[in-house]
Structures are given as structure tokens and as C-alpha cells.
Amino acid sequence: MPIYEYQCEDCQKVFQALIMKIEEEKELRCQNCGSSALKRLISRVAYHVSEADRLANYDPKAQKEDSFYKDSRNIGLHAKWRAKQMGVDLGKSFEEKLDKLRTDPGSVIRDSE
Image (cartoon, rainbow, N blue to C red; front, side, top):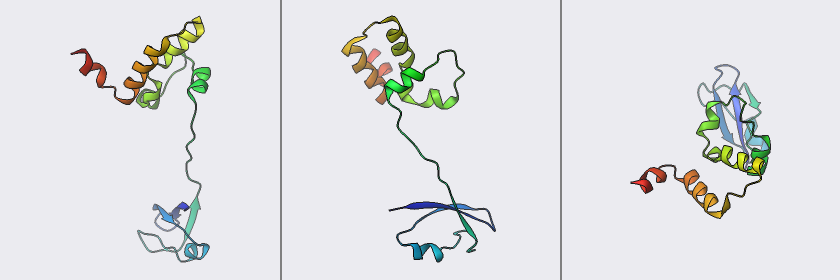
């Protein structure tokens, strides 16, 4: 079921609408002002980047945005990158702890008490 984003050309409000049939789009009105002067926007897309690709593209010297630090998938990325660079296998135990840390970062503090 396609959900499209529209912007009202009168009031500039952006909203989403579920369009089941092309005829429904012709009847669509702005949810804010009721205008029919709408333009369909190109929505943002998301794509999955594998850990192998993140490791291959990781540059420890590059400046990182806040979003890098907020993404729990990046926890341990530097350690894995460095281990790979040195040819060291961190082992299954490291991977298990890293998975736990990525899914529940607070567990490290709770487990150490």
C-alpha cells in the first residue's frame, strides 16, 4: 500500500496520504487548509548497510556526526576495525558481548554492579 508525501502549494504544509487507487489522488486535499494545489514529494529512503560494509568504509580519522554516536550499531566498530587491521580474531565471546551491548547498552552498567 503506497503512502505518499505531499506538500500544499498554498500553505506549504507537508503531509502523508495512503493512496489505494489513482482516482483517490485526484480527490486529495490539504489536511491543513483544504487546498487541492498539492505536489507529490520524493520521500526519504532508508537502506541497510551490512556490518562488513561499515567496517570497510570506517575511517577512524574522519569527523563523525552526532548520528554516528547515536547509532548503536557503531558500538564496537572501532575495536572490530582495529582487530581486523591487526589480523586478530576477537572470538565468539566478544561478539556475544557486543550484541548485548548494542541491544541493551545499560546492561553493561547493571552487570558490573
